[in-house]
Image (cartoon, rainbow, N blue to C red; front, top):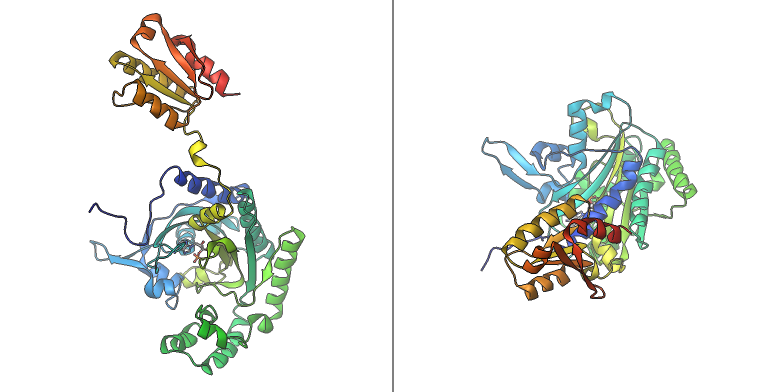
Length: 421
Ligand code: AMP
């Protein structure tokens, strides 16, 4: 058997791969328009970055990391998410010593050793945006709006926004203690009992029905917020409402990463089955300090490119791709000299800004014309020995079959005129 892609991974192939590129573009365009600059960090980092930054009690760190020792004996991990790397890079290069907030966006592969299923992969693609160094509810609202606008630009109508707040270092400990008291009284298995002691909020996120059933009366963070967190959250909500953004308050939304404080949010799509989250994010005021940096209150999100493409497919937002033109012009050379000339003509067409391809491998007229049809081109340019002798080529309109001889020197200008319309 030929080799297969590893479990939990898949290949993006044309033409579907174009969808992923278009989604990446559209989801990040609003951020770019709002002054976010592009950052590219390494695909692998020191393992310690994620252990400290994402948190040892999270599923990501405790069981999902691709960790290995490199030839120099360092513990290296393929990045499971983007935020920790962005904060590391900001601190390393002192970007936080300039104007705040530091606004950055990124795009790239993430790796998590997850139980693979539809919509949940071991290698997936995220785009992200982070605003570091400001505590301002308008910044939380801005980021949420940028994601909302990105989904809207793609034509998605089924994305719902859930928001919550997790409190801060004043009120979170009080809530945490109340939650622990409640959870300790429940009938839970040993690993979950341990989680109560390390990160009790994560127990709220447990998807098992037998656990969920017991959580009905669990204390909620909204009932334990300090005045500052309450006011902050009210302002975020009011800015969203004023901007016409619909959202649902979800007092149980905690998300799987340890570093979140105050605002948390998730975007879900109901056409995706169990893996319904298309994106999420929140405020992470303590992360910089967890990584050895100064206090740097920050907020950001990561949106899943794979799942966004699937959501668009579920909404039927893509047309018939087979009908989408890959190139506008297709060259059909017949004979050795014609191949040389066609190569140069196609090069000239491309340099003039037209998309063009040609038949390769010395195919006969039948095979080459089949290629022209498959390419989705509007025009075929056919060149045989007789045409060369006459200094012309046959230009065939592939839609209506009309064909005429055009002087070689005029083909580029003529096709440009017809196709630029
Ligand atoms: P997270 O970094 O866990 O907050 O995830 C942010 C977004 O990335 C999610 O809402 C998903 O759209 C996407 N995502 C996370 N994990 C996976 C995965 N294993 N496979 C595909 N997409 C994922």
